[in-house]
Image (cartoon, rainbow, N blue to C red):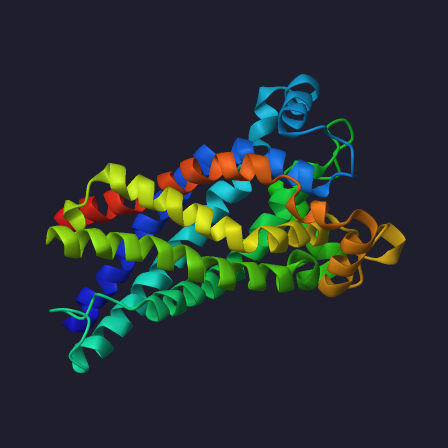
Length: 304
């Protein structure tokens, strides 16, 4: 009996996570394409975020802001689903440990910051199996020429990359992805869960009694904590995932470390924060939407 309720709990977490992922993509995608274009362009291509966004609008039209959206809509729905599934599973594991040791409140669910970081790292690593390829394909579509596109769409990109470069081609930039997901989500979920736990303990309420507005605000705060930690790693990931696959097709970087050294040497420290503007504007909306989507879907599923 316990396993079936555990199973249904996992299914609920995965479903609620999917709702969060879809909300994240719809809200965040236009900002994301501006960020990627700025991260991967040569120094001086754009005077700033508005110049980049204006250029996309003028030369490629408004729909360009949702270029490559099908991949993240399917993929990030799955990614965020995996994230929350792994997070909640690990949180329940720690809660059982706490309960056995007589700590963490009545049901052991008041986790320590260390436990929350560990749960976030597990969520990030589980997620990276899918997020690496999904983001690689999205970035290829976002940065290809509007007039002479190499790929007709996400499935065409997967087919062409896989047939020419195999599974390693699909997983290009995965070292940077693993670093980004593990460090970033450790901080991200710790920040969000600590804020949620604080409100529950201060007001003596259950999680489903927390105002949706506060879920958005805590999600926005967690998003800023995430980007404060991972932005330079994210920029390296974008560079690796837009680089050529071999010397014959213009590969610039031999490895992740080589990419860091080359960017540092040729473009200086400012390159590591290029595109930060759209990210900081996008972050509260996209991350607020993610957690709102998750919390509301979880409440709805719990009421069934």
